Image 1 (cartoon, one colour):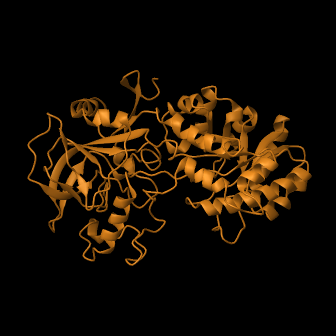
Image 2 (spheres, rainbow, N blue to C red; image 1 turned 45 degrees about the horizontal axis):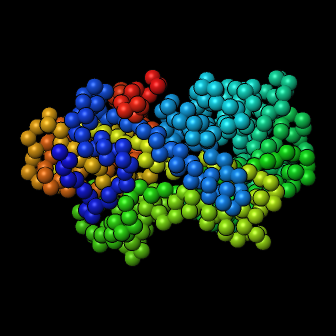
Image 3 (cartoon, one colour; image 1 turned 90 degrees about the horizontal axis):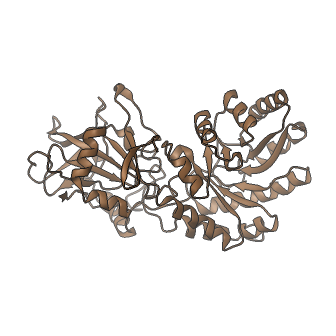
Length: 461
C-alpha cells in the first residue's frame, strides 16, 4: 500500500501518469530495488517531446524560430540522446565525453553545441574536426581554437559567449563583454566562422534575459557589418518549471518557516535561505520549486516584453535570427523518479528521530540548498513491522553529521518500517546526476529506462 509521508506543511510534488502507475505498485518497486540496488533512478522520456514542443510552439506563434538544445549535463543517461533527437531537439554538451557520446550515436553536428566552461585541447580538437559549433568563452580559448584549426587546415565554427554589460543584469564569470570581443575581431582572421552569439545567465529572471537579448541583437549588427555570418542567438538555460502542485503550498511553507523561531520544521533550525521572516520568501540559494510562469508561457512573456524600441521577437525576426535555448530541468520535467530503501530508524544522542536510507545526499541533489518536494512513501509486502506514527529526518550513508537527504522534518502518520521505500518524484533534471559522488567507494545508482512496458538498464536500449 501507499503510506502517508509529508513535510510540515506539505509540499506535494507534481507527477506524471507513468509515475503514478509505478507508485501504485510497491511490489514492483521493491523487486527493482532488490535486483538493482538502492538508490535506483527510473527514467521515462515520454514527456520530453511535449516539453520541447511547448517552447518551439511559443516561438512559432510570434514568428520566432526557436531551436531547443537539451542540456546533456542535466541527466547522464545515454538514452536521453536519441530521445532528444527523436523529439526534434539538439544537444548542448559540456565535456569531451558528452560530445563523443553524441557523435558516436550519429547526432548531426549541426544539432550540437559545445558550451563547456573549461575546454581542453582534446575537446576542442574533436569539436573542430566534427564541425560542431563551439561557444568561445575567452581569448585563451580563441588562441587554442585558432592553433588547432590552422593545424587541421579548416575553419572552426564558433559562437561568441557574451557577458552582458547592462547594469541591471548581474555580473558573470562567463564570456566577455561586447566591447572586449570587438577588440579581438581583427585578429580572428580566416580561421573562425562566427555563426552565433551565446550568453549564460544565472537564475531564472525573465527581464534579465530580455535585456540580454536586446544587447545581443545590437552586437549581432556589428558582427555582421564586419562580415561574420551570425545566424542565431543562444540564450542558454534557466527556463522555469514548477515541481509543486500549487502556489498555495509553496507560500504556506515559507509563511510557516518564518513563524518557526524554534526551528522545529528543519534540521537544527536551518532557515533554508529565508531572506527575512517579514518577507516570507527564500533567497537565490534555493531553486523556486513553484513558479507562476513556466516554459511556453514564460517564453511568450519574454519575447513580448518591450526592449530597445521593440520586443525580443521583433528584434530577432527583423534580423532573421534564430533563437536557441539550452534547457535542462524544464524539458526533463516529468521524466524521472528516484527510489531508496529504508534501512534503519534511530535517534541522535539528543533525541532527534532519524530514518536512514540506503543512498547518500549527492544522489538526489542539485546545487540548490535543499530539495523542497515531499517524498512519496511506499510499503511493499516485504517490509517489516512499522513503528508507531512519528516524525523524523531522512539521513544517508556518508559519515558526516550533515548527511541529510532532506533538511525538512517529515511526518509519518503510519509509522516507518525497515524495507519501506522513499520515492522522490521528478528527479530527472539535474537531481539524479549533477552532484552524485561515489565517495566511500559506494556504487552510483543504476539508471533504468522505461521501454516497451518494461525497465531496462540505460545503455542497453
